Image (cartoon, helix red, strand yellow):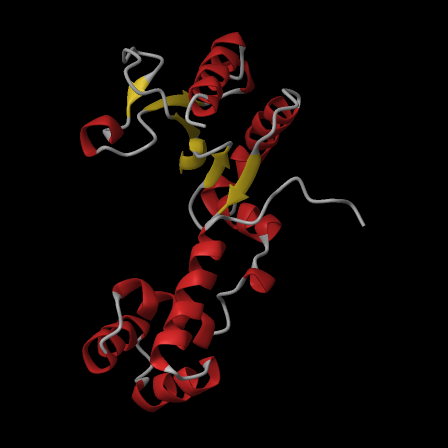
Amino acid sequence: MKQSIYSLHPAYAMEEAIINNLIKKSGRSLEEWYKTAKKIDSGDERQLKTDLIKQEKLSTNQAMFLVERYKGRGGAENYNPEALVNSLFTGSRIDLRPLYDKLIARILDYHLDIQLCPAKSVVSIYGNLLFANLKPTTKTRIDFGFALRNEKFTDKLKDTGGYAKNDKITHRMEIRTKSDVNSFFDSCFMAAYKLDLESK
């Protein structure tokens, strides 16, 4: 079997820790929590999370991850990165898939110690920490984000709003054609990667 180029998303480690902590503190097994969820489940997931928070005094993260497990979606064993990537490039955005593949091939050619971690709406890229991501933003454009701190914003390297909000991803490039995956892209990616190395 061909080895996946993707890695387990770090959110699953957080999910596991939160679920284990819930079991330990409550003294109730996961199966018992499923029974509790089933009793109050009206079919509306958002309402179920709200009811667990109000009735069972769970935190927002506890309720969110518990519902994910209860619905059979949570847990590392259910993580399917290839399916998540495929779902990003369906419908009106299907024509962006070759451009995505070009970006990923370019990144893999750097031979860096990084992890590619797809999620529902974005593919995150980790070194020590999150330092880049990419997502199909429109049917004709992929936005490639970088954690570049105080780097100046330009026409090519735009403001994500992340700096003002204290988010990791502060800059983005608009990738519309394969010609946009060029030496300038390389320099931005490597600059973000080197900044991440300094975070050790």
